Amino acid sequence: MGSVTFSQIETKYRNRFHLSEQQSQRAREIFPNGVTHDARHHEPFPVCVSGADGCYKTTLEGHRLIDYWMGHGSLLLGHGHPAVVDAVQKQLLKGTHYSASHELEAEWGQLVIEMTPSAEKVRFTSSGTEATLMALRIARIATGRSRVLKLAGHFHGWHDQLIPAADGTPADVNWQQPGIPESVHDDLIVVPPNEIEGVERAIAKHKPACVILEPTGGRWGTVPIRGEYLQQLSDLTKRTGVLLVFDEVITGFRVSPGGAQQEYGVTPDLTTLAKILAGGLPGGCLAGRADLLEYLEFDHPSGLKMKHPGTYNGNPLSAAAGITALREIQKGNPCEIANESARYLREQLNLMFSNKGVNWVAYGDFSLTKILPNYSGELSDNDEFLPYQNEHRRIDQPIPRELTRAFRSATLLNGVDLMGWGAIMSAVHTKDVLDLSVIGISESVDLLRQENLIS
Ligand SMILES: Cc1ncc(COP(=O)(O)O)c(C=O)c1O
Image (cartoon, rainbow, N blue to C red; front, side):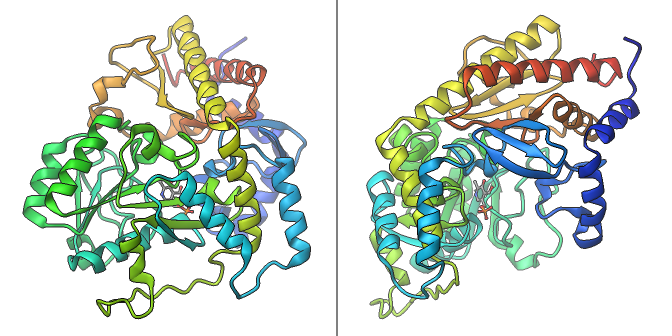
């Protein structure tokens, strides 16, 4: 085969996804960049999907893609899980919105309490973004302090209070975001991940209301966090009277039925949940210590009630899907299956990279996998391995945009829909599917090599 230029990948991509291109042209007239979520943006255009089942998505052209987005992490049980579909269909006929209390919301909340160690009480929201917003508001009311401490590179949704420093690598510079008032930036303290001394100094200096973090590492484990650091944070926050918030929007009901907090045996004061919580439909919640959630109650003895309306809070359709998904997770072993599948994928990818002599590495924890191209650190065949000894400034480096774009087009051409440089696993990705994925990624690496984007 002669040399392939990037435009040849692009030409192939345009040919294979010609209907998606037409749809994208229409969408660009309607939406900025033609997309409805930043992460779905792709040039020359994203694929357009017409259906999904199990671990596959089907494009407008009828091409089946192995899906590693899985509903942005919400579909641990796969697309169209029969019990979830059945529960939603039944509920659809009984009403989609009661504007009233209903039995399903209580059953759903009860399951959150049974499964999540920190959950003594629960309040539903419509999304993870709203849940983290509520966590901060409650922490501020309870402590009477306004500052919030977050870890560089951790994503907690897009509201003003926490979108700064959510990415913008290297993770601790240029973290301010346009459109956000200076006063909000002033109240936000950002420290590097995995350095407990930095948190200790920041707490002493700034006396924040809370520390919030993704407990397995920012942006689902780009710079992994493990149990020892969580325990140190828990001890430190308890000692200093600062509230600890685990954002388990991705890790909740995924890492284990009780999330990262159950897995590592570290119980935060507050927990934010979404995604798997609502079985693939919209929904989120704040869960945690009863005395903290009680600031939502009317006539709170302090006189400090937190206002909380929200049209879709505890929506019956989301409740029906959520209850069914959580019961499947509670009684079965989907978390374990997905964790093991991800471990296998990482192992096979690293074998393939090594056989090809390409300097890439796959790493990650539980069912969340990341790929680091152009890696120049040590390697190991232990799945616990941390690239660059977990030095966050080295792992969380910007990846050249041209490479990211070419890799995405190449993997889609080869039938694999990765989520950026990562893969979110479900319990329905079988070994055959994983082996096919490795072949697809291997062929994508070949394409990149042929056009001299990698050595
Ligand atoms: C850790 C984390 N927190 C919060 C959010 C925001 O959730 P939502 O997109 O439901 O607003 C996300 C979304 O990806 C997330 O990954």
